[in-house]
Structures are given as structure tokens and as C-alpha cells.
Image (cartoon, rainbow, N blue to C red; front, side, top):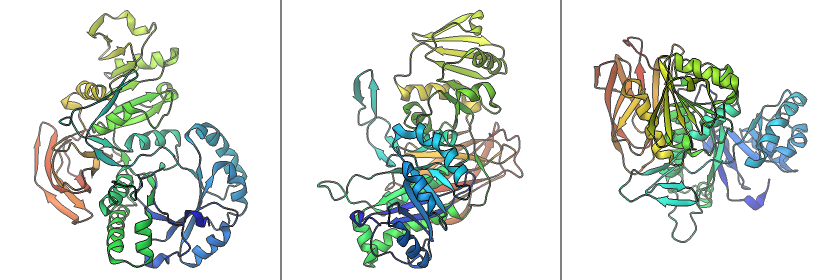
Length: 475
């Protein structure tokens, strides 16, 4: 083990594509607490030439061991990987294409080893007070009265679900050093928010824990263990329903050439609670678009892609083509000028909107997509939830089954009013603090169900009982 990284603890929340999972810890210190004492059975160790002694010692302590390896060193690590649960491959964002190209060879050469890829571009989940928008080469900062800005990893997770299909998204981020002058110490709520975000998004997270908490845990300090136990309670909250098979609901498709997890347009869609799914340019030609009401195309369509756009619009969908410069089949229809940079064409039961320029204001763009959906197609709407991200999940029959809520203003518990598409018989609410489940009062009208979440501190989940649902059209 690299003792130079002595004071570093990492929590790794691992889930399957349809489940919430366990918490993994990476303890880079000479004094490893037993798994039974720490409360978790899964451990991540950093690769080194001498790691195998650490692996065996950790296994004797009751841990299931995972190895984190720079991807170029994966062949060497795989030679001694007997007994490991998996190898986690790391690399820079600029190396993603090479890494993904090497995966099939690695898996073919070592069929008994599970290789997973770590995304290096995660961000710290937090709420900030201002919005920064780039207009050309100028950065503009919003006024203090504007909607609070949230740093969330939901867009990253959506991109990773498409770029690494068959693998749960795995990401990490680094905190600002809490020891720096003027920087507040990390709280239990900071760690719990990070765990809650990954659990709500059905993703895996490698979470750095600062040296003060690590030292306190090693010294059995009561205050440190109180913080750690809150993290554990949030991890357990997401693991309790680990076997339920659900998929994220979405009625907005985002088609891209470049699967870029830092794309700000998708970040703003996530921020505005517009459920979307990321697709590739190949999906535009071959994929299913059933259940989508709006299709946003950032990719440059070829002839086959243009035919598919016509088909989708003919079926009644709204297709938004960004940075559309060219001649397209729908130009045979009459063009209607929407604004300086947008033209609309009626195609069958739907329409195609062409934006002549790239998106320069993702905030306004997200609001425009909301307006295009219209009230009748909104899968969910939140009031008093400016600091909340909600992610709906559906059953195999398409009806929504649950919604995960994450409040990024961790010190300000919220009463959130929610409207979901579908007429449901009952709504049940649970949290890490209050357990499961509290029945919520509901109102049903015009194919929607409304309810109020009484208190959302950090994490919450509502169960939509659809066994008696009426006219549910949720996707």
C-alpha cells in the first residue's frame, strides 16, 4: 500500500443497473479497521507492486477486495488478480477512447475478471448561490436573486450509461481541502449528500474522506463515528431496495455525436428536472424512440438520420435540431420563423425545429425544452424545490414506480409539492431519518396525481402504487 497517501478514505457506492447497492471503502492507512467494526464488507485498494500482501490482509479482516488500477497497468494487475472482486480502471478523460478500445482485449484475455471503468470528471455535489454562463469568450455571473445553482452528477451518469453500456456508471470527485484557511470543515451532511446522489442516480461513487475524519475513526472518536454512522445510514437507505428491477423514466431524448459527460446543456436539463436519456448518432438511425415526446439532436444527421427525423416528426414528436446548417427533406414544408435563430417546420403530426447556432445559454435552452413538452407531457413537476433533483423510475410496463429526491440545500429541509403524470391509488414516502413508509395525501385530476413531501432533508423516495393506477401514461 502507498503509505504516502496515508490519510485517505474513499467510499465506493456500487450498484447494478437496476439496483441500489453497498458502500465500498478505500482505506489508505496502516491501521485498517476490521470490516465488522467499520460496518462495510467491501474494500477498494490502490494498485502497487506490493498490493497483494495488503489484499490478503484485508481479506483476513473480512473484506471483499477491489483493486483500482491505471488502465495501462491493467495487464500486469490482472496476472495476480485471483480472489479479487473486480479491477477498477482509471485514466484521464483524454484517454477515454484508448481505454475503451483496450477493454475487449482485456476481457478476452482475462474472462474471469470483472473490469469496470472509472469516470474521472465527477464534480462535488453542492448548491452554489450564482449561475455562471459563458457567452462567447465572456463569463457572466447571475445576480444573487437568481435561481440557486446546483452542481449535480446526473448528466454525467446519463452519458456514462450510454457510453459504457452494460456497466454501472462509476465516478469520483475531489473536495476542496477542508484544512485550507477559510474553508469550512466537511460535515456529515456533505458526505451523506454525495452518497445520496449516487444512490438516487443508481450510480457508483468513489468518495474521498478527509484526514480529520479518518484520524477520528481510527482513534474511535465519538464525534467522528457519529458522522460516519450518518453516512452509513444513507448508504443503507439505498441498499434496502437493491433487488427491485427499475429503469429510469424519460420522455426527452438527447442525441449526440460526442458522449461528453461535462456537456452543460444536459446538465441544465437535469437541473430543471426534465427526465432525459442520452443516445448516440447511431441510435438516431437504429434505436427505439417509443415513449419520447421531444427529441433533441446535437449530432449532424446523415441521409439516413434525416429520414429518421422525418419519421419521428410524422409520428407526432417534436424534433429539435441544433446548429442545423444544410438542406433537409422537411424543407419542402413551409418554414415558420420562431425567433432570430429558430425556424419551425410542420411534419406530419409533429414538427422539426431548426436552431441555426449552437446553444449559448443552456439555462434558457432547458426552459425552452420544458415549454415544448407542454404541461400535458410533463412526467413530473416540482414546486418549492429549487434545490432539489428528482429522478423517476418505471416498471417494465412503463408506469412510474418510484421517484428519488435529493435536496442539495442540506441544511434546509424542504416541503416539496409534486405533480406526477398518472392517476395513482396511493403515494408512500420514506427517508433515511424516518424510515418507511408514510402515506401521503393525494389529489387526482386530469390524469395527474399531486402530493406534498412533508420534509426532505437530504434524501427521500416516494413509492407510486400503480397496481390500481388509472390511465397512467408515465414513461
